[in-house]
Length: 336
Image (cartoon, rainbow, N blue to C red):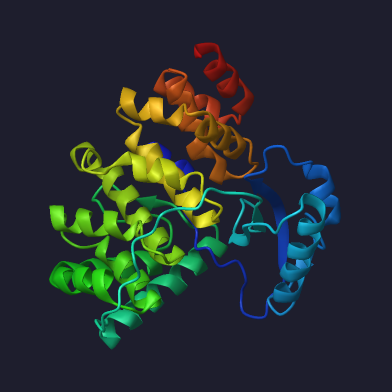
């Protein structure tokens, strides 16, 4: 399992733009696109693969894309998300064309806040992660139940400090995550809580946060659960998969991305009930769509589909490494 995590689950920071630096658009990928003539959507977009764009240009360009997509398909896209980066350090644009609304928990209204030293630590961690991603140094070891960079020493050093802080302040992190009215405070707490001492209370808090009304909170909590599930099969069994199967159908990129990462780990044991949930037509359709993306973000869906098809794990690993997605999909259809 660790092989897959290091090879293909390169979960990068969502922000794609460097400070005043133009970025090159690599792939433009879609989700929720069933029944849509994507060639028409691509042609209408104000940006195309290979173009360069700056942070200053992006808000106006994104708004233009919203309008042109609406003209082509009859409604606005659910999201246009620039994501750092593909294997050539280019930005990927993920465009959601439809999605199933999720049921969120009520937004908290409390005043709990993280202290300034925790906020500073979080900011340093986030900056180092983006720096590492831009250098192509994004692989991580998840075997301890929290993420440690294996390719970028400055990030690893900060992650170890995050671990030390979270172990000492787990109760505070859970309190901020559950009660703070500030979305950013909850998002930071979710990320830091993933580095806390493993416990039932930690997992329960993160599962609840995966239904938060704020996308960044859901993103960080689900990522933390992915790491925990990858590190320990007993912990994985404590995570209710149904919440994240539904999240796969979201119109929000981070929901789709992190749900697939977590489900990759939850399907490792071949649970028949979970595999049956994933065979629901709408879910299977979304997984196949994701598997056909041309970036490493497709690999979680490819492995999940391969397990659903009953492909032996070593052989599945080989197929994914070789990019033989259609062979995986064909094997799945052969088992239905």
